[in-house]
Image (cartoon, rainbow, N blue to C red; front, side, top):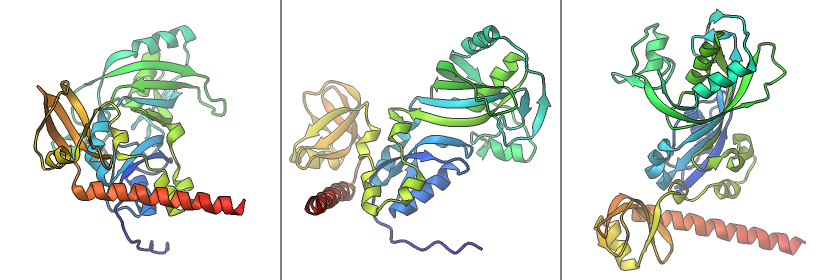
Amino acid sequence: MNAPRARVARRPVHGVLLLDKPIGLSSNQALQKAKWLLRAEKAGHTGTLDPLATGVLPLCFGAATKFSQMHLDADKAYETTVRLGIKTSTADVEGDVLSERPVDFSQVKLDTVLQRFTGPIAQVPPMHSALKKDGKALYEYARAGIEVEREPRHVVIYALKQLPAPMDIAQPAIKLVVECSKGTYIRTLGEDIGEALGCGAHLSALRRIRTGGFDTSQCVSLEALEAMTEEQRLACLLPVDALLPQHVAVTLDSENAARFLSGMRRRGAWADAEQVAVYATMPKALLGTAHVNAGELIPVRLLSPLEISETLGQQQALEQSLKQSNETLALGA
């Protein structure tokens, strides 16, 4: 029997952690593990990855959770291996085998099929998905042996690139890099490509390599986090406004910043903008988001004074800790 996990003293933590999610964990399980390691009070993620998928999973802590929904609309990129000749009930390796067919096609036919699935396409969501029907997740119907009608969803495949296939598997496979819009089901894409090739297919591997402006080179693993000190874990966090890269920056003086934080509109010589990140001048701090219409800065999502204070305090404490570490290293050199 596993020993009970020790209780930890929670604390306010603010920022974005780019996690390289391991295979076998759900997004929520990975989130809870990272939350425990950081001793964070509040956390959330910006969209799920299947347990069998690995790769970029942005985790939001504290004030960052207020802007996590904005990242759901981000474009994504995946690297996937499509196993040919076998169709399964879940379109991946976890499902039951539904059919097996011979694999026989030319590279010319494959190129033609991949081109057909590039650009705007319609997908029927898989039954084994978290999409809801009448308030109930589709996978719940699937587990009960019930198939319900699903409306096709329109997504965009920006690029579909074939990579050299893995040589260590017995079954024929193709390896692809998929650049796509939000809401794209890669399992469905792989299954549809298999049907178009006349042999059926399912995914044997899936890795998200980019979401929005975040990619795997910026990520940290749970294993690496476990080996770090608390200060090193905090240093892995990106600032809250890392979730707002497309927002126009507007900076307010102390008087206008206080009024903006109370929910009041401000007037200024600003161009109209749908997405605005609003900052205070002294000290430099994110106050929230807004939009500008006819010279009016209209609040949309505000941080609380406590969140702002805690974020500044966290940054100052981290900077002080890093300074002390550098001084210690210098003395020992």
